[in-house]
Image (cartoon, rainbow, N blue to C red):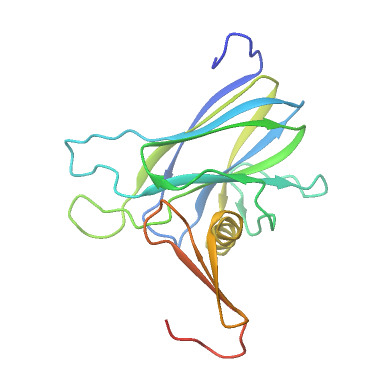
Length: 198
């Protein structure tokens, strides 16, 4: 229980960032039964004396799911995400990301993200990194672990860039989005009918 006056839901759900963005990625469906305060977090253990210490940024985005969206089965791999981010944390190198928020009754999709490549103990690029979703609310809610396919996860990362990144315009139809605090995380949107070289 996060606070003594909260009599709703307190859930810890383990998951992990896979070693590659070319496989399905973790996400979580939240069903909030009543309007109420909530605290959402993703946390990971860090051993600073280990070669496997965390080497990248973390954060998460929350999408509001339409009431007309289909019900998802546990362990189902989703192929689409809502187009717009409801709210997102900042992305930074750290071992936990916290977000207090008042959630209205409804359905939400939480997508945990690590934009930058994680370093493996042997020095190669890419490694599995466990984390835990913490969800605390003053009202009743339900949490269901799901998966996003690589294309849907890419779309969610683009949505986060549209929501949170600083944008610079180059030419009339080329935009460059850069997330702050997450190293070199850049998304280039080219609407020209030809390729561009960066």
